[in-house]
Image (tube, rainbow, N blue to C red; front, side, top):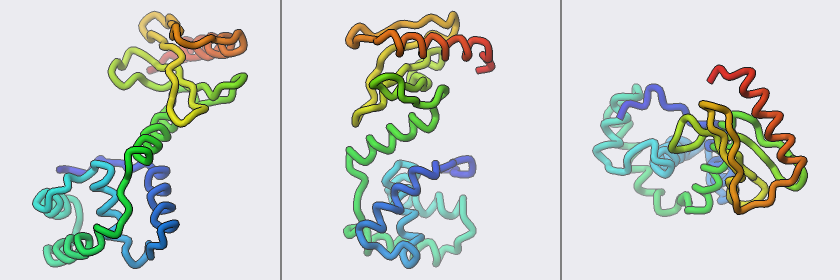
Length: 177
């Protein structure tokens, strides 16, 4: 696995370090093991030993003995390290979407609204409410003709409608993407 162009967002890494500190881990002493565990837990590295060895050989300047020592140390402390549970993974995914928003999340009325790229269709932007534990899809924007389609499940207040239409106009004027 070539990780040369892999960028790990700072907020993901910072959250992981906070979790480790809260759990009482000596982050400096076990920094390599914690980094390796994070890469495996978030899916940047495959968990199989052979894949880890191959990836570390291809993407680091570590010697074979350093790689083997790291894997042994990680295996030794792995059972004591916290795992990324479904709620933590969901929180990281939510933060990831918010950080990659086209229009940053802003408080509009009683909602926290942002525009993010649709995960399955690159020609669509999702209008999300990020106030709760999970994003709520309020509507979508078709970037080919800049049409707005509200979700039929939510009552859209006039203030929110004005805000979204104004942001669509700005996006349309600056439609470089």
